[in-house]
Amino acid sequence: FTVVRMPFSNEMLRCSVPEGAVDFAKNPRLRGLTALGVLDEVVRCLGRHRVAVILNNHTTYGEFCGPPSQNSLWFDPAGPFSESQWMADWVMMATRYSHCPHVVGYDLRNEIRPRWSLWPSWGRGSTVLVHR
Image (tube, rainbow, N blue to C red; front, side):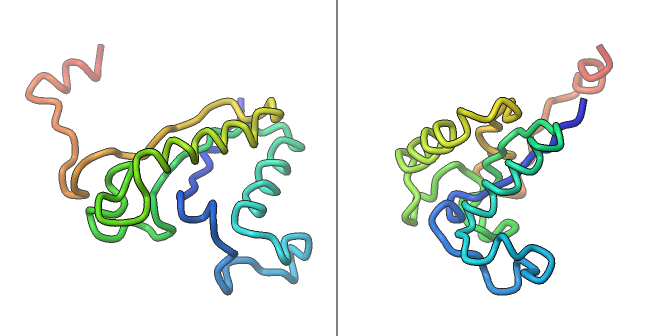
């Protein structure tokens, strides 16, 4: 069973492809597409090759991490991405890919925490629980 966990940001659902992000000499069909259009093509190609896809809402903004307030939660309390916008984005994504049987899952948000430095702590019994 082959699966790809395909990350995306909420910001990329509304923007053009950044300069230099795509080698159009190797990918001429992607010229003129939005970032979401490129994602559509990637998902389509994966399905054509019988690779399952799990869409992963990895970050809010299209950068690796950024300030803790921007990408650690599913919304940006100080910015334009509200919780209701995040939910609307997921409705749009689920509707958009509902006809794709190879899209098999939706990872609602990557590594939720109030700050990037606060990793989950499972307490002293964690090693026992992991090995059960």
